[in-house]
Image (cartoon, rainbow, N blue to C red):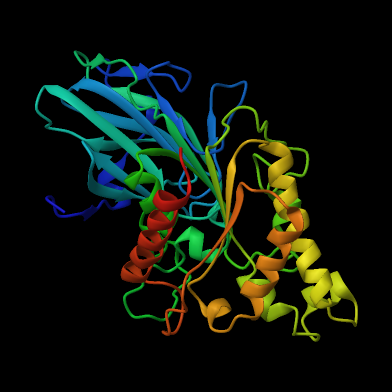
Length: 361
């Protein structure tokens, strides 16, 4: 990284909207020069709601400074701010709507700015209400759209949970999670592809460590709202990667856990139940995307320590008899906790190699 990353403290960032200088230009969220990546929601008040890990907002301009107007309903989210492709700062939006200075004293030439959501939707919902550029800045055409699109459905591995907890203790504080360094985001950048991540730590297909499972939320814009339905025709991916079951592999054997009892009662699911549940979820994705290549992936936590769960996935895929549904398994990393940055890179390399050898897109 060419530029040392700075964490901007709240006091150094925040300026009340009412105190904006007249020289600033407001660029509304609906401006065609602004590019959004991932599953976002635009509402009638010209706000864009950011829920999911890895969602991002970009603008290209010629000028010397850029700010953004943000608020967060919980105040628990962290965002990477990249200037011209280099990670420059990390911000943590406050609950109150404020203007955040993202960069100043830039050379008066073309710049690209990206706001990238590091954290998961349980940390809160962020409202984006526009960029603020200096008086003489020039907004440039949007050149961020990419030909390829890749979408991920996953758990904490895909979210990048605790990927930057260098103590190895899986610290739950949002600052230690960074979806940008998760294998999915790395893979998307390698292929220069549009990136969408539908993921949540602890989630499963049949049972989760919390009350929702992926088949209940995979089709939502707002993961907390059952009525908030995503239009799958808006952004059809070339490739979908499903990396789930890590949590099921634990919880389907934990008969005393409240989520086990909620989902299964007193009787654990059979092998046939597991295979069918996985096949049913893959079929849901196929129904939404009839021509998309689907990679059913497992790894690199202990789900691939034996061939038990890879066998379930292989059986489910075989039952679908779909030539564009593939399996890809990554060996157990043989370390404690969640994948760190280097282990995420191993995951990404394995997936990249598989896609390059298998899928023509």
